[in-house]
Length: 284
Image 1: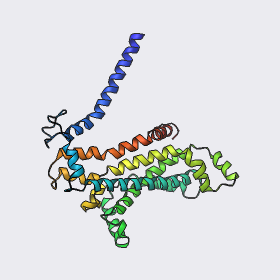
Image 2: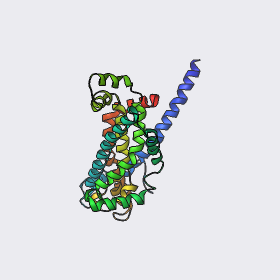
Image 3: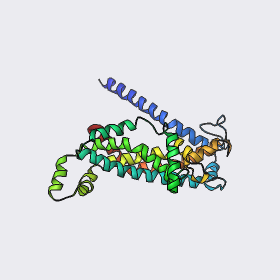
Image 4: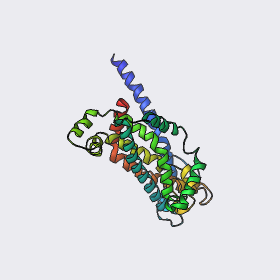
């Protein structure tokens, strides 16, 4: 019996180690490329000869490019988009979860149907819409961070509303009724009673939205055309294109620096994130 238990533990440990190695290999390879003094993928080794931090210094100090601005643009777009998605989706999910009104089921199905078509397929329409909006409100037009946030909001609202509604449905309605018997309005009920209970799913939606917008390349590349308005993903692509030549080691160094905000965010909200994913998996 003991031998069988040891065998089970051994193969599970082997599978876990294999999964960890598979997940970490790209990160290790990128780190090796970032500290490699030779800018070539063909000569990149896991442990390079004469490792250096010059690529990190180049990305942070060289005025030839706008790495700091690109990173700040990504942080602004991702943070504002994530906050607005959480707020608007929470209000919509609360309404669909708690109120019964004519057309409710139709609206829910319409929201779900709209998510079938990804933003990429609507790229031309989005481009023309931003072009028209920009003639009236320049801050929300093409080649602006406001316009890019507007596009991301439209693509993220539907799915997150459904995700939050499933979580909101698990909160007992008796809590709402008790609060309203005590004289609370619908907004007070949402903010003081429901909001603390659904905080984990709000955190999950925030961080998923932040990550998806922070790393998006395609939509940002189409909607932004000025080097000063580029996001981090679009700006870094110049290092493997023509403008800055094919500098894979500096591209890798920039990618590692750009991952720092996401790692910090994960560290700060890891407890809420774990709770939101597990509770949502069981009850949603």
